[in-house]
Length: 314
Length: 272
Image (cartoon, rainbow over all chains, first blue to last red; front, side, top):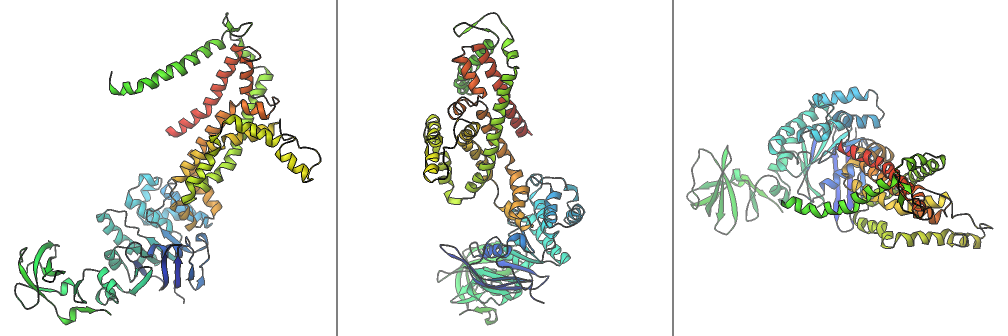
């Protein structure tokens, strides 16, 4: 069986810059995938090419083994949840969800739309206009509007970015549950590494229009292939070209080790992050247990680590 | 006197002197009898209004409504794609908007005369067609309803395009994309998403074109050659050659009332 989606050396060049540079990717059916990267890395452009809103300047896009590179958005069995939801402001929640069903000429549109509305627990809001819905409710309507079409692939463009932090965490769990429940392949675009790591089966990290590394969240965190990936996912201390995670960095009130002074202490609930100004001018973070040794700001400390905790890059 | 009323004072004075007073005079005139050499005399009479029910004048009213409605429809059909195109033109938007406004740089009268030179028997179009051998005798392009319609559409098209552009420009570009994503072809997107959301702009444009078209007198006079008499021409005639000020006043007030109807409709729609 071919992958649900395959990108072969897909590029997008704009007059002044190359937004996406020979990106290749294959998504297996039923997985939760993320495209992760800083703003301007080309992840949204990649998503827009898959959705059909931008035409690649090079490469091929295959959906279930079929070349869809030149197909228009309405000809592709892919659906998108837009960043600001893009709900039709003149249509009720129910009519928004019915929109795609009617365009596809499916039977029983109202009944199916109602079921989708129930699925996202918004049955009571069927007649509300988008302006009368909260951010989280709009998000769920947008999700239902796409899922009701049972697309081969669901694209999500930073769908949680507009929500407040508390709601974001809740919606994150709902997204994951929804993906598992429907079995539809999700491709999620985000700049938030925590979001990508917690949600995804596989993550592709993008930088400067290229994919730096693809792997499971664990792979990327424990075995980053490049300096960029190591620095972008989680915190990283750089000791003369060698990377060490804060949790692998030991801190002590006496040598041996790299000397420095405590700059600040961050209480994170389950642990403590000690920010250290190194004697050579550098900066590092050491994670210590909450009930471990206490340090004061300005105190002289020494940092050390095991070779096993070192990450080396070319 | 507080600051608020101080600031409003000039507008109030202006409205009283230049709007309320003349309107009151016109109201009074419309109920008086015509003087022998213009002006008005007693006694008071409703006769000027009953005269308007004469089939001749009802015909003129009907023709005015028909011409204004037709001009509005043509402006809508021609103006909608134009406004949509400009709203999506990206960086060239401002240039294109300036081009729409360019005719306003010269006087309305001069532009209407320019059409005379284009449309008359020895004008640009007929000369060119005759030289090319397409026609043997000049086409009757001028002094008919078609010429009047052309003049009205030409003059008032910007009034349709501008409010509609303002509405379309505010439309979230993600909405047509979402429609396409959900399976709608561009034509279906236009019908189910863009048109319903552009409705307030279309309504505003229609009112802004319909009302001045209804009262137009220069265009029918010059391009219609006096053969296509509209309400504006009737009123002008009563105050000039016919010297029947009371009847002209009555016709003016009826024109105002008929013009106010679409405006009232629009305001009610917006209040909802």
